[in-house]
Image (cartoon, rainbow, N blue to C red; front, side, top):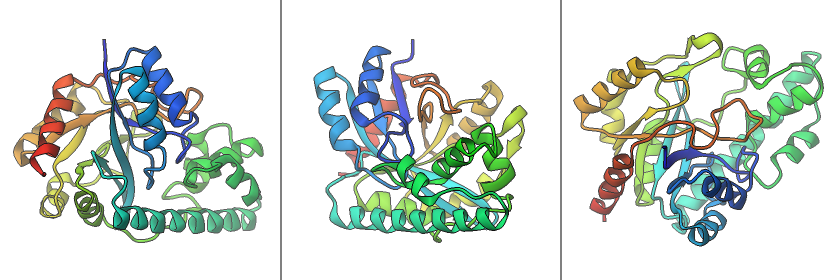
Length: 284
């Protein structure tokens, strides 16, 4: 039985459950270790930590920072970040402001394409969380233009879509350095991403990219992820071995009705947590 999930989202970014609700679901599923990794924010960590203490769950404070490389998008997870580190908090706020501006521009482009949605509705869907493309996708679904999140991204707001707007420039190396500055452990998220039908979307050359990330402080790579078969996981493990990287993984849970795995739906060995924790302790 799986007891670990190191990749989850709450209403602090684009998840469906509040931090406390997410912890409650984790307790219901008998998870023992949970990491909150909201996009460009740690605002949900305090609430989750309080709920986790009551539930007897080990809560790892985390974040997922969205970055870009030429022609592609890269996400970097940060574990054990100091959510009270002021410079770190301020930099995340700057990134969130960029997400808001990006969403506004996407809504404008969609209107010009004859697919009008309300920015007010996008903000309502985001609530107190960090605005992101999933909120734009949900507004497209509600307006009847698409039937699913995948269709919204494929037809309109994915990287090759007509309403795609580049984010504020922030590189994976900068994300690694930012996480390290907050005392955290940077991990490259879902290095292989599968779209509908199991087709690999937006692949990038890991061996070419990793040296710069290692120089910036990267310590791990996500190898357990929804849709990864044994071959994909072993491929990523081999890369991790070559570069001396830690392993990580999780469900990328956003919500029951969202097109991701359920909480705890991806098996992650407990030894992964022990090694991540040891690496974090070694930084201090």
